[in-house]
Length: 76
Length: 514
Image 1 (cartoon, chains in turn green, yellow):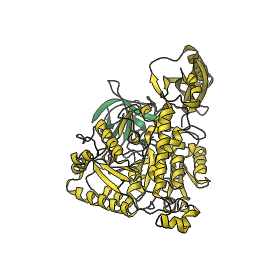
Image 2 (cartoon, helix red, strand yellow):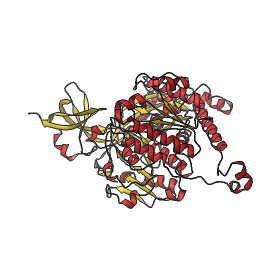
Image 3 (cartoon, one colour):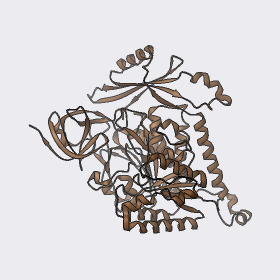
């Protein structure tokens, strides 16, 4: 699946054992997907930190409110 | 002859996944049934998609693999007809689906809670977790891999179960205890309660994930780390609470290092989630990998789990209770049921996170496996006992009595335990004022609020319970979730929970995120 949107950092899994800050893709329709990189650290992936605040297009597997990315690029 | 154990599966679903490989799985099931027979268990395979099998079970064959209502009804019919001591679900959720329950802690990121709890309960199909407070059945799931096509994985798990060996408690007294450093004190408390000591506790950071062969060889593993959806890793976190999550445990590092007979209790979020390995670059989850490497049982969560910032609660407790029972000589299935009972029995009513805990933790493994031998009474060495029971150290009657006790305990919970149900009403103004004041004093920035009614079964007024009926009337729970900025600038979420009775706030607690 391919998605486009702006990357923001926000808290997820609030109040649980694994509450943490994560990068979240917010689409133009307002839908939110937690961003992960296939094979990357599911909680904090330094390779994705540079995407914060940028608009991106990404491709990957969407499951339960997240996208596990296999490819992505920053939009101009 | 009584049926002691029923294996339920969907042969059409297995056929679809394995086609020419299905005969290998059927042969492995036959070997498993033969091995049970040698142990004195009469085991029956029931294909819930088979008209003949379901006719015999006085039920309706399942027409659609994923139809949860049909599957629940089919398993209920099987249980009612055969009244087995053990019910083993054979297959991952694409063979026998989990039951999708509404998430009582909505807003935490989980849309719902996939659960095997309803299969352990007599209550009919439904999506309200509060309808399944009284489990009575000994149930476990021996899974294959979601989306799998090679029968070798499931054949291997069936073989491990068929060849299982009961060991002594001493064989399980050594342990691998893993914790995120931020939860070190809580995990140490858990280990002390289960093993009597916590000196072998390992934390991430600074250690992990390359645990030595000797560390992984212990047959009891207790894990309290972070976990994520569709992830083959668990994560640590420094004691400071900073947003750093080094890898603590990895599925890929387990191969050929897990001892035969290992039993694992994992508190982690998604710790026992079964997912399609294709969603994680072909790597199956930690739970699936443990089982493939010879573990007997894995007790963990399907979704986001909960625990307090200090001391023990929720996930800590239910995992402790499971291992307590295993070490005391229970079968894996009985240990899982007793863990649910002990956890639920701690409370007058289950709050949203307690209710989610009860629904999300489940057993992966053959429920009839008894990893640790019980300690027989001296009478079992007498000639009269040996003569009467043909040399057995325990009696079939003992298991029947245990099942009766478990059914009674579950039935009692169902008839007396209360649970929260979300409501649209706002909290009374004075409760709002108190929560606001507490939030201000705790320097909390509000994120969300939710109110709940507390409902009790009508039967919860018998005997001395009658005196509490009036107190329960109008009881409600009000939750304020907020962010707190600590002195180290690290944001932490805090939940303020107020319990109200007849308009008066009778209890308040502050739960910190972990």
